[in-house]
Each structure stands twice: as structure tokens, then as C-alpha cells.
Length: 601
Picture 1 (cartoon, rainbow, N blue to C red):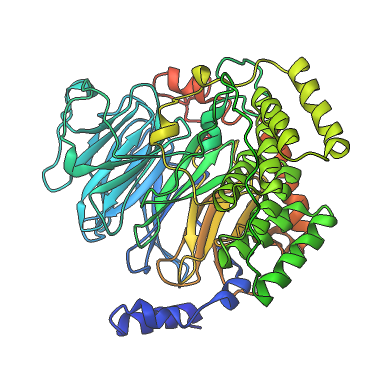
Picture 2 (cartoon, helix red, strand yellow):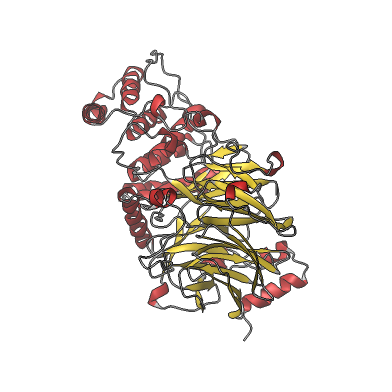
């Protein structure tokens, strides 16, 4: 029997690849019906990477077993199982040369060039000193492959010219990007502005480079300067002088970054943190928290503006959010207020409500997100009493307690008559000033220059847990990229609404954890993998209801899963073996010298 999506895919090819016609054929209804379909079995180890062909006819998979498999997913056929001759786990596979050949990157530090028809190895390049984590190709020239490694370099190969490695990788003049101390975990190219590359390294910054401004050189070259740097603002305000930071045991690091099909948006999955969406236009700036060293002079409060009335639908949504908040369902309240703000972005009431819900939810990054809302509200209405108080609450939540105390004193003067309601909050700040370690100061912040030059996020997606492996992906999904997908340490696949940031569905995707989530280029068809030795396919036509692949849609279940994961994020040290890996030379071997099976990347 013909797969229903294969028929739809064939119609698309016959229409000349018209995406607009295909988009009409699937919508939120199909996504709501997405279900587990089947497992593709061939590998003898964890499947660490997946890659669709450009048209979506074929799928590649790479594994700890060091094989590269080529599949025809619509028929579930294995077309080729290619022995890569890598000595370690494969972490990346990409089609090249009009999809007749493949490049792979692995834990042995090598990039290999494979031929599909003959299943032979055409080339092996060992320029990198440490593990190769990801490779990418260029949309308008798939003869170019770029590899990224934990040695802090990205190297470019032209498969038409071939490459002969020097006795040491330092002698190879193919270094495109070099970082000083950070390992490069992931790299992807912009599909529309193909000169741009996004890079995720061993820190919180997503860097974008312009290939037109780079030259190939030896790895002894100076550090490469990016043209843009994207970073969640709150991660710059962590106090590096503290040794017992209760929220961040190590520096969060990006495990995956990618562009959407328009090339105008960048998505980054942050290990030990959340998922962040950035606008490539760079208009969202990081909030600059003032220093507490100089006290602000007291001035009379500005008159509060009369708020603009909301339309009926937004007002009803706001009331729904308020009801959720009263029930202490803060995660759902945040999503509803965000949906309202997409309709009325200048509503001070909505900004204040969401800020309060964020402070109550108190997940990683919520404190700074609340400060962003309060700051936005004050730009619209500087005299708004609630927005001024939300700002002070946010400073306190971010542990800028000296500043919070100063602002609270001014607030009392400007808005008298609140002493009774402020008593408990004032005591809380006073207690924090006595008991906590010294609060963050601008002199002790990580990369303070980025507070002025860095680009902040547009949207956050929270609820999953990304701590155990450093290859977890996050991707856009849907005909208009209106959904965000990611795997998690708790066996699940998460589906978020891109606009509201709310969780729509959670699927049981693996017996242990899910790393890879790769949507089909044009259809509601999904390939995933984790620590199991299979590739899993998901489609709206599937009717599997087995317990191993349950789908959660009930809001209470979604809330519990997300809340449990946030506890894990607070308690776990992300990637506990990373420092050891970065300081060691190649080789993830067991005591007998054999490659470990299913290493946690």
C-alpha cells in the first residue's frame, strides 16, 4: 500500500516543487494527528545524526556503530549501509555532490568522504585534533563541506579538489573559523544568505560569521571575529566571582543552532538552559541593568497613561490568563499572555501580567524575561506604578539586591501609601542582602561588552531538559515554521507553538532520551533518534497507540513534565564530562581499547 504522504510528496514533485500548493494541504490539523509510525532498524549503536535529502526522498543516519545508512523512508527500505571506516562514533552526516556522495564527521577527529553507489571511502581528512561534532554544506554549492570540532576550529573542504592532510592538522590551510578556548559544537549555513554561518560553541553565545570576510588559513591563525553575536541577556549577568552559583554550575553551551527556511531567524538549543529564537535583523537589544554604585535622584512620578482598550478576543484571552494565574498555573498563564501580546504588543497591562506570571513560575531565565517585560512597559508608560514595581521585583529575583533596595526606596517616595503591602517584600530584600553572597557587579560579569553589542532573543521555549548529551537539536516545523521541536533527557519530544511559546504536545520518543529531531523538508513527516539503535518515523497517518510512544496533550500532564524538567535543569550539571573531553586527546575507549557503545556524546 502506498504511503499517503508519498502520494502527496509525488504531487508536489509533479507540480514543480511548488511549496505554496503543498502548504495548503497540511496545517495544524495534521500536526495534531502526528503519531509514531515505525522504526527503521539497521544500526548496532545509538543513532547520533539524521539528514533528509533536499527533496525529502531519502534520509541519512549515522551511529555509534560507525555505519552510515541511506533510507527511503516512505517505503521503509534500507538502500545502503556504508562502512565509514571511522574509528569512533559518527556525529554528523551530510549529502554532497548532488546527493550522490556523503561527508561524515566523527569522534576520531576525522571527516570522511563517502560514495553512495560503491559504498566506498573516497577520502579521509584528519585535520582536526579533537572530535568532529557537526558538518554543514552550502545551499547553492553542495561541493563545499564545513566541519566543526571540539578543537575550536571549523574547516572547509571542497570535495572536487580533494585534500591531503599534513602530518599535523596545524599544517592544513583550511581553517575557516577559529575560537580560542571554546569547542565548536555545531554549525549550519543560512539557506537564503549562503555566505552566513551560525556557530554554537562551548558557551552561551550563538555566533554568525560572513564567509565573504574570511580566508582559509592554518589553525595557528588569530581568533576569528563574528559579524553578529546572539545571547540571552540574563546569561551575561551571572556573577563569575561566585563559586557556588545555585542556578548555573557550569557555563551553558549551545548544542544546536539552525536558521529557518527564510534565513531571517536563528534557533539555538542551550545545554543546561532553554531554547532561544533570535531575529537576524538584530533589533532586540540586551537590557542594560544600571550600576547600583550611583544612587538615582528622586523625581516626581510621571502621570500614568490611560491604557488602550483591548479587542474582545484579546480581552477574553487575557481573562483566561488571569484565571490560570489565580489557579497557580503559571506556565499556561505565560503562554496565554504571550499569545495576547502577539495581538497587542504595546499593552502595558499584558506586559505587567506576564512579568508577574514569569516571576511566579521562576524557571531559568524567567527573572530576566520579567525584567524585559517591565522595561518594555515603562518605555510605553514611564509612570506606570505596576511596571515600576515589577522592575524592582525582577532586580531582586536576579539577585541585584542593592539596586532593588535603592529602587524600592525611590518607589516608596514616588508612590506613597503602599507601606503595608511592601513590608514583606522589603524584608525579603533586606534578608537577601544579609545572607547572600556579593551580588553580580559589572566588573565580574562574563563578557560585559556583549551587554551593549549582543543581540537578545525574541522568544523562549522551555519545558524540556538538555543536560545529558551535547548533541540535542531543535528545529522549526510546519508549513509556515509555526512550531518548534526538540528532544529531551526525559525520553520525550516536545512540540511548542512558536508564537506563544506554549507546549502543544509531548511524545514519548525513546527509552532513554531524544537527541535528533529532523522534520521532512515539506511534509508533516518527522524523523527522530536517541540512545535506542533505531531511527523513528512520525506522521499524521500513523495509528500506533503503543505505550512506548504515548502522546501527552492533557494540560495537567504537560505542566508536570515541564515542571519536573525544570527541577532537573536546576539540579544537574550539564555535560559533566565536557571539561574532561576537551582536555583529553582523541579516544573515547573502554579499558580494552574498544570504542564505547552509546557514549553520551
